[in-house]
Length: 222
Image (cartoon, rainbow, N blue to C red; front, side, top):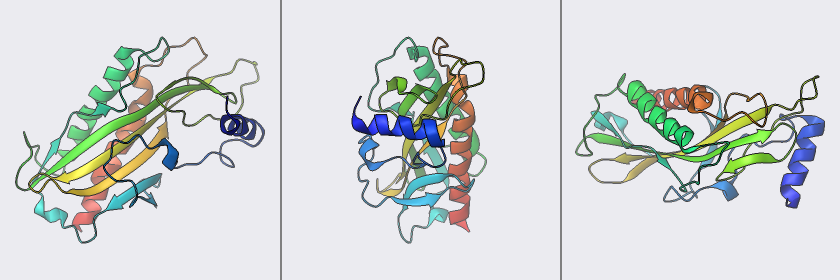
């Protein structure tokens, strides 16, 4: 284990999450999925969550009359493990696609392909992890994110799950990127290190991300 993870684990074990763990995705953990990370700035999502975000100055989202949701990617491509199997990874992307379509269809018709007046949403899941509370990550795909505070009175340490996303929003006609977002979230706790993580453990996070994306779009329309 490198010095940074050791320091993080000790900090979390003694002080708890709020005082130690960054709520933003660190620049060193950017996946390379987005074209350019330099313009990203710290911001708050409509639900109040911390995000790294960029919106093209002067963009007029009223020009978009429909939206095309590209199939979400796992980036970089991970290797499934016993803790986080392929069925979980596939379930996460399938659900992410579904909830993005559900939420965006409330404000724009869904398009079948990019084109004139189409907003293209290009999402990726860039990290999925399960970590023993107060200890180093148990299994991580592909980068370590959040480890949270110490265990219950029984002495059995629970497992935290966490997940990160990067998404680009593209003008379907010009192919120009008009917005980008990077964020992470905590999924449901697992009972112990033997419990396999499932897509259900991340659904609440994915729901929140999709709602925030749509609410951000609505705010720009006004």
